[in-house]
Image (cartoon, rainbow, N blue to C red; front, side, top):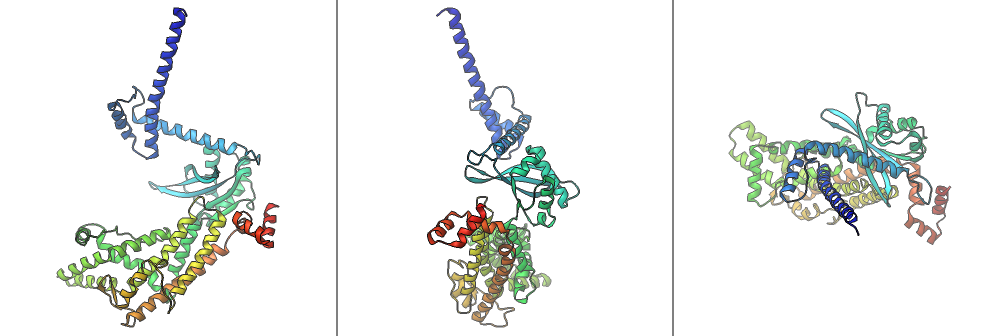
Length: 479
């Protein structure tokens, strides 16, 4: 081996090591910037973290140390992800020789006084449904169905790169909340793409519809449901003093003395899911003894007649037997509704699984009604908060605090508790009626066939028992 050849080998080794060093350097900075993007950190923090890497002895070079690098890096990550999504949607499946189908979901977002529309896609990736963010564009002035559909189509065409021809082949479903269906966005989007609406399974999100079921109960004018219509106003009035300031500090001191946790005073919003409403009730119930102690101390020390009278009214309200027993029972009822709401929000929950979950919910409500009957017996599984307090309520107490019977027309705790049970039964009856209308009866016909033709355990049982109806559904779907 001559000197020239040795020199070439050494030069190549030095160049390879330099490239490896540059690669490690770039990976250090890129990994740091990528984590900043994932965690939504400020770009200024990137500069400090680069300094920390240098102090730890890691190679960071002398370029791409400013906040502008993160901004440009974010654009590169977005472009790479869009190309990856477009590549995935363009690959043919080896068995079907077709490109993968996908669903479109959309929702409005108002930030900094401007309304934009977020558009996403739900795709089957490696055997799992995954929700992927596709893009977001400002909606402008007109928010009707046609303009909203044009905005969504612009995201799919311009930002993702899907042509109308590709959309007609691969777009099969549309999911949104009630505002989209009231303005017929799915109809306008299907017309703009040039596909028949019979091919698109347009589904109103079950979690939003479940929220409307609960709101139907709140809007019902029946006298026996008046307690539920007014419960939000009562909770807001009783917790108003603890939003901030002096009384919140007093409540914190009382909670510390009682070795209790003071939960955040929250308020009911009718546009949030029922799990959010239940959280409001749980927090108030958890703070109830703290609020009671604080209000009693303030009532005893208050010298202004008007303020003293106001505190007395609040104490009577929060110590009402019907109010507190109904609140505890409502927490248990909404626990079952919240579990259903969480399940139907899962991306991987299949349509027939949601149908079965809705049916199971109606079975559950029927069981709850049976337990709340006059001679019924509550179980801890169905009523984890109310059942342990029944004996105490029958003494006219709750957590050692004597309750009053305002509005009960009786001073007998047994009769008052029976009235609470009747109110909870009325709540369940209205819930069942509204749920039957909004979630069970109002389903696309294809969902029912999918439930019977694609549910493998059901098909296996049908073959085992020679079920003609199930086989007919399978033949219909196959054709």
